[in-house]
Image 1 (cartoon, rainbow, N blue to C red):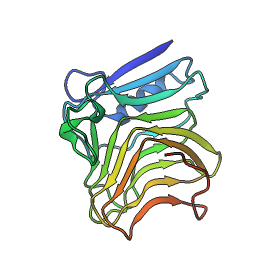
Image 2 (cartoon, rainbow, N blue to C red):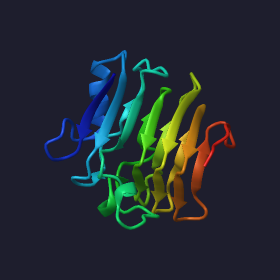
Image 3 (cartoon, rainbow, N blue to C red):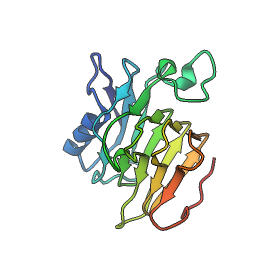
Amino acid sequence: MTTTKTIGSTGRDYTTLALYEAYLDTVSPLTDDHVGEMYNDTEFLNHATPVFAGHTTTGTNTITIRPATGEGFRDAASPVLRYDQSKGVGIRQTTGGSFKNMIYILESNVTLFGLQINIDEPAGYIRGIAIGDNSANITTVIDSCIISSEDNHNNGLLSLIRGRPTCINTLFENAEANENMFRSAGGGFPHPIAF
């Protein structure tokens, strides 16, 4: 069975990804697949960090975050090769202070699909997606996403602490050549990634 909830600013179940994650806390441990479908009502701008943790996910009790049908950049009439919220669901951070994670994943069996994520904070050392902590290896999937930075102070578009992401058809774009595209607490990139 799959339980689907809507996320967006106009008439949806939840207005932010963090509020959707808080809902998941109320139904944990998960007993089926959960899908958060995002709507491009407005840009998801400077929202609280969703922390996906403690939901007792398994291979058959998963969490997927994706645009609703017709709401993602993959549905746009013209190709999208960089962050453009007018073409589909966009999550952007322009404030937040040092070392903020835009999305933080601390459990396995979480999939991010078809999202645009953009760091546009000039001095905050923001992380786009942070995966894992020091207690467990986290396996997750990042599929068909655009993850980018407009500033020269990002702290990793993808930041890993014992994380094992599988990246499929995902574009990572860093505006500054001297900044971190990928970051690992263990030094180097610890697990293979398929693009």
